[in-house]
Length: 381
Image 1 (spheres, rainbow, N blue to C red):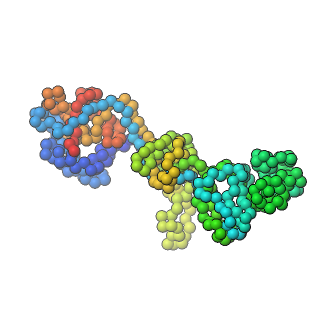
Image 2: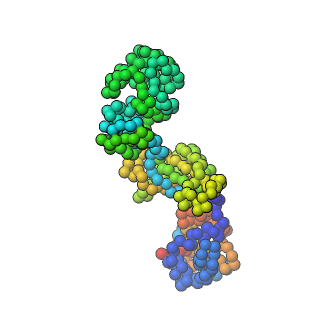
Image 3: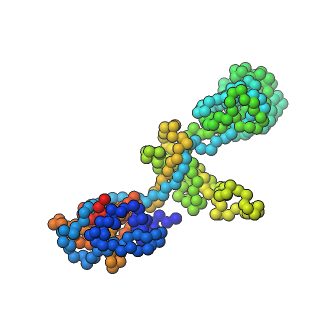
C-alpha cells in the first residue's frame, strides 16, 4: 500500500464523497461537465484559468483561508475491544461445587473452582502440570512446585528438583490452608500452572453442574485491555510490534495503544471450510492474515469490552506546509488544478497549484502566488 496516492485518484476519492452542494454551486456559477473516471462518475469543474481577475459579483459564495499546518494521512482498521486471547481451563470429572466469578483477579494461589469440593488452584510457572507429584519424584516441575510453595510462605524444605518428605509436609500444610485433603501429594488435576497472572474471563459452568473430563469450566485472559484485529499480510509492516497507534472507542473518544502482538495465520475459508470438490489445497499467501493485538495505554470503561473499535496510525505526514480544504480545488480547463484566490477588493483570480498529501478533507498545495493567509473560494454548503 502506498501512503500517498496518485493526485487524480485522491481527488476522485474526495469528490466521490457526498458534496452535492458543491456541484450545484459550480453548476450555477462556473459550469461543470460530467466525466467518467475510475470508480464511477464525478464532476470536473471548469473555469476561466487565464489568471485575470473576475468581476466581484462572480466571487465565491464561501471562502476559506490558506493555512500553514501539518497534515497526516492515516490508515484505519476495525477491531474489537477485549482482554486478548483466552486460555480455557478444563476440569476432571465431577460436580462443580464452587467457581470464581468473571473478572476475578487471578494470581498465585487463586482458587478457580472446586470439583466435588476439591479445589483447583493457580500457581505460576511455564511447565504445565502433566503428572501427579509426590515423594521421590524429581524434575523441573518439582522445582517449579516447590518455588511456588516457598513464594506462598511455606518452609521446611529445599526448593530444588527433589520431592522429599519435607516437601510433602509443606504440601500438607498448604492443603490444610486451602481446604483440600491433606495427602502430601499433588494430583495433576489439583493445580493449573500459568506463566503469569490474569483475570477470569468467560465462566462456562454453573455450580451444581456435572463436568466431563476435558470440558472448559472458565477462561483466563490477561488483565490489560486489548484491541484485537485481523489485517492483510501486506499491512503487517504498518502494525509491527511496538508501533504506536490510536484506538477510537465507540462514541469517538480516543486513547493511545501499542501493538504488542502480530502473528501471521491461515485465514479461515470464506465458505466455512470444505470446498465443493472436497480436495485439500495447500495454503498460499492469499490465504493468510495477520492477527494483531493492540494493548491500551490506560484502561477504559469495562462496559466497552466486546465493543467494536477503530485502530488508526499515520502512514504519511507533512509538516509546515500550506493546506486548504479539498473543496477549494478547481480542475482547470488546460489541465491541473487551481485555487480561486479572493483579493482584498473582492475580485478573484485562479492560481495554479501543485497537489501534495490528501488527508481528512484537506490537501497540501504549493504554487507561485499562494501564501499563508490567502483567502480562497470553497464550495458552499
